[in-house]
Structures are given as structure tokens and as C-alpha cells.
Length: 123
Picture: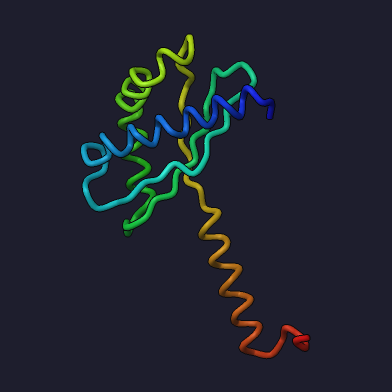
């Protein structure tokens, strides 16, 4: 990723986060907590992949469906925030960021192996 892409990604991450803070209650309700973990933009800045972590929800996929339904409204509010930074608004693709879940699964696996004395000798 180039320096320009990294800068634009960070600007997008901050502004999309603010949109979710302000409009989230109208999109998916008061209970779920949605955070923007990172944003990746293409070299031509036409597409932004937005990775979200969803907490406090029994069904994160349902929250993601609601976000996808509200995508035009999110994009419009996002444009109002960044119109002075960029010439055209990119397409926003939303994805669930499951890196924390994967890390928790790995941690549980290591704890189980350690409890079963399969980790080898500690130094």
C-alpha cells in the first residue's frame, strides 16, 4: 500500500467510524456495538473495503445485513464528511473482521493443550 493509500484509508476509517457513531442506532439499534477496524482502498481510490467488528450482538450476520441495507445512507453521510478531502466518493464494501474471534479460538486451543500437558516443557 502506498503512502497516499494509507493516508486515505485512515481518513476514511475515522469518518466512517463517526458515521456509525451518529447513525448506528438508526441502522441496527442501540444494542450492538460496531467498530471500524481498518479500511483498505484500491490504488485508484474507487473502492474502499471496510472491515467491521460487531460486539454485543447474538447475531452479527443480521447486523451486517442491516448495514448492507443502509449502505446508500451510510455512503451519503460519509460523502458529506469527506467531500473536502477527495474528489469522488468510493464504493464502500463492508466485511466482518473476524481476526479477534480467530485469536480467541487460538488462545483457547493453546490453553487446552497446556492444560492437557501437550505443550512440552516450560523453560
